[in-house]
Length: 390
Image (cartoon, rainbow, N blue to C red; front, side):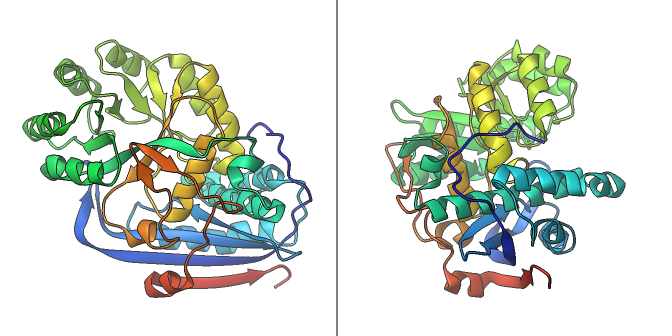
């Protein structure tokens, strides 16, 4: 269970109703990574309503495998909902702990700690949104933060269209750009050169290999990459690679970033202790939600690394990531996917507008705008409603 985070939650939570909404948006062009391809954009939302009528929205990571969204929806229905509905919890952290404890043995038995953790994370986000809406405060304020803007960067840039996408993202207000690599040395070098040449004054770029390389392959390529001056090289190795290999790679440059595929406090503490990472990138929809993510973000900053939340999904999870980043100290950047995805750009209207590299948070209570019912209908593939005692 994560460390308890003191907050101004004013009343106990008594979840009485839970909605599950699974959405899928078609893509004109598949979204490619070095390990797999997305032929549609999924988004798994949960809406939790309290006995007093207060409500909140959360998002559960579900990008991979292709059937992952449907599977996680059923885990919410059959495992998490019975643990949550009808209970009384002092705050969202207490509910998150109950979800983790209540599903721990089943997750071990099924060999699926990741999906169970993602379900708990999404429900935790919904409960924090609920608490902030009930308090009439933007979530960042409930978490003790005062910032209204966060630094952001454009993500999901395909290597074959690096220069054109950098130009488009710049026009949308971005000043930092992350390019996908891991598709072969020559193709990667072409994308790196194109991205570097496309930068304007004061702009920066990052590279993401999505766990593609073996340690010896990464060590051989790292000095060449470092010469181009990227802000960081993300996930060049598999997340379960021994820390010594990460340390050896870090000595060759460029600065390393990782964390989206780590899970739990112990894993992140080991990553910090390794000293290999300049940037750590937990994904609050994959593990921890707000209850686990806030103390972790502060621990990362205290250890001298930079907290940069990983995120690739719909608008609800993006808003949650922005509020969490804004509630923490440090110069971290918010990941903002720039591939076409109406579940990010239309679901909650225009959220987190970017100007000169800064994303502005909404002023409304909770996470901000609610999901648009018309968008929920247009892209919905599954809708379930569950009630306490039902």
